[in-house]
Amino acid sequence: MTTRVFLLNLLACLWCCIVLNLRFHLAGHHYYAFMLWNLFLAAIPLGLSLSLRLINRFILALPVLAAWLLFFPNAPYVLTDLMHLNEHPGNVPEWLDLLMLLSFGLVALWFGFQSLHIVQHWFARKFSHATAWGVSVVSLGLSGFGIYLGRFDRWNSWDLLHRPVSLLSRIASYVLHPLAHTHIWGFTLGFGTLLILAYLFWFSAVPTAPDSRKID
Image (tube, rainbow, N blue to C red; front, top):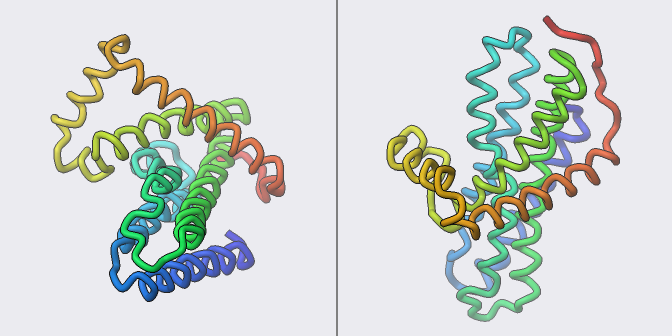
């Protein structure tokens, strides 16, 4: 990560905190404090992806990649916090709530795309560009499913460690009986496609990978 991008990330977080603090001041309560936690969770995959630059062997990278994939949906998930628009408004104008929720959602998505970009280039150097794009598309598609599990079933990334049997049983029921859960797969397809298109737009504007050398 360049110094410029790092400072931009800090500035984006500062902006989110400023808007949220203004909302706290006007409303007289801290209802939206959970947005800070959601933004923190969105930054975790970015931190994990940055650690890949210190790892060359695939076998050593597997735990990091698994953790990254587990937490990656937390980044685009913040976009769905728009569903909380104008909850407990108090003396807060609706446009401020919209500004706040969009700020957090877009910054979180920015974190997610940065992390995916790093992972994609790691796979490109390790294997091939086709493999790297396959990983990116699959990760974004799975994120659509992850967002559903988090938003509507109220599971979170920690539950894979805390309640693995319950979570995996629920996922298995969705996979084994897809026709009984068409709304879930519709959501997954819709949001997965949206994320893929958004990433393609974002990717087309970013510079080429700074290091295209193959790694062992």
